[in-house]
Image 1 (cartoon, rainbow, N blue to C red):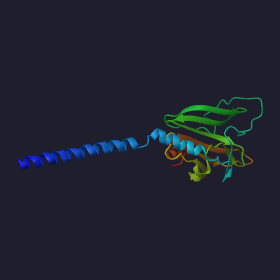
Image 2 (image 1 turned 90 degrees about the horizontal axis):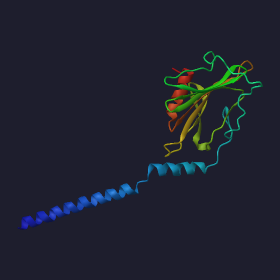
Image 3 (image 1 turned 120 degrees about the horizontal axis):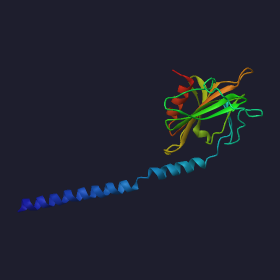
Image 4 (image 1 turned 180 degrees about the vertical axis):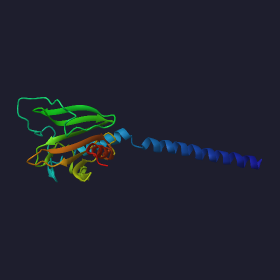
Amino acid sequence: MLRVGVAIVACLALLGIAVGAYFGTQALGSSEEDPVERAKQASEADKAKPRFMGELGDFVIVEPGTTGGYPCPEPYQPATDLEGSELYFSLPGGVIDMAGSCQGTVISISMVVDHAMVGRGYFPGPKLEEPFDAPADRLKLITVGGKPALAELPIPDDFASKSQVVVIERFPSEEAPGITVWARTTNDLDKAIALAEEIMGVP
C-alpha cells in the first residue's frame, strides 16, 4: 500500500512538472515578439533617423525625385536598336521593364528578374547622383567587380526592407558618358551584388 501511495505521489509530481513546463512554454511563446510587429518597429525607428544627403565617395546622395537624369535635348526620338547598345544586357529569366532613349540612342535599360529590379544606364558626371532614402549607417562604400559602388544595407529586423547596390562601371570622359549598373532586392544585398556582377560580366 505504501508503494502504491508513493507511486501515486510520484505520478502526480511528474504530471505537475509536465503541466508547469507546458504552460511555461506557452507563456514564453506568447511573449515572443511577432516578426511583423518587429519589422514595423524597426522600419519606424529607421525612418526617425535623418536621411543622408551629400557627397559620399564618387557618389552624391540626393532626395528621391530630384535627380536631373541624363540631359537630352528636344525633340524626343525613340531608340530603334536596343540590342546594339553598349548598355544592353540579358539575364536568365529577366524581362526588360523599360528602355530610355535620347535622340535615337539608348540611355538606360531596366529589367525585372527573380523578384529583383536591375538596370544599366548613362550618367553625365562628374559624380553619380543617386536618390537614396536611408540614414548614414545604412550606406556603405564598397567595390563590385573592382568598380566603386555604393550599397544600401537592409534595415535590421525588417524582412521587407529594400536593399540595393549602385556601381560606377565607367566614369564619364570627354568622349563618352559614364555608365552605372544597379540592382535592387528585398532584404538581400548579396543577391543585388551578384546581379550587378552578372550584368557587368564579372567572372
